[in-house]
Length: 450
Image (cartoon, rainbow, N blue to C red):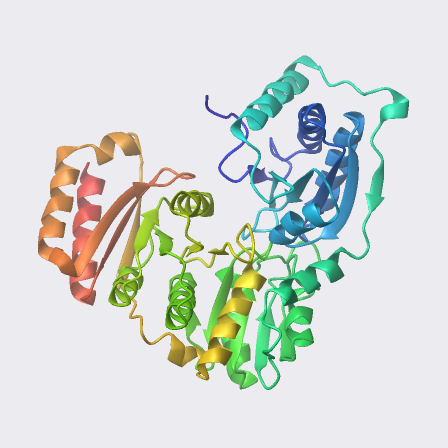
């Protein structure tokens, strides 16, 4: 059965436009509270990022949960992975994150997970949607009796607890003393956490984009806009820079030369470090968009590599299916399941810093075993017709076959439809820049003609 409101990453949209409205958030809180209470839930933990709309949505959800008889613990601005950890630490039965991750401030979203850091199961999501539908369209929302209303408390030491958790994933015998690190928190949820983690582990920290005002989250900063971090690393002559996104579940690096180190290269660094110590558990899970250079570099070390669909939830599913521990995306979503149950930008960054210290090399040097292949991505916007029907056309298929024949074993082609826009994404990568560009444009022209 398909979901009407829940996407792959909860509910997300533009603030003030359905479904990201206070009325919807309150009724979603009530519906979720009613379903979760029926399975024994007594308390939920609510965290958020630094968007101004977080106050409104938090209050509305708080009212909905209370009306359903479920207690609420508020932890304020906190990274998404922190909510997963703290829900368990504070013995809450479920966690709620109010965030739209790397999106601009005028978007927001709501997602749920269990106290073990996993998403709610399909049955629970469908039950919540059914109750939510009744509340939205049939005025079915009801309060429990006054004496059974949920209570609300605010947790003041959540940040300190999460800082200690992050530090606990870094080896006791290592120290960041002597390293100068620039940290870009994207004016987001980790602004009061990430700089302190690295500082308390001994690093000299230059903190930038750490003054959220409700509307500057991800605004030309953080993991999706690395220009200011590159500049700061060069100006301060830092050893490296670390950039998180608005909810700190993804991370990107900049080396001392100002060059970007992305998620694919981070995966290589972590896999190489584990392999060199004989600690590599299985293989690595990437996505359909992972650079071919990563696959080839892992192959040289004899490390298995499989591709999941694009999206960290699919990477998690593949990791669980294989029993492996390490996976992620080029965008910086890194999953290291022996350390955290979900993508955690700070935890992933600490594993990279560990690899740097143990190798005795600089970040720029420990990534040299992987050469990223030229990758061209062309988005073809559809004016008519469905993406599925166009992708099924013989003319498009033949264009792909012809391009693959030219690329041979030196490259690959990927065509996929966008999950959020009327687009078909044409991706080609190979060992040759000109050939990559030519074949990408050839396939894109065939899609446009179709």
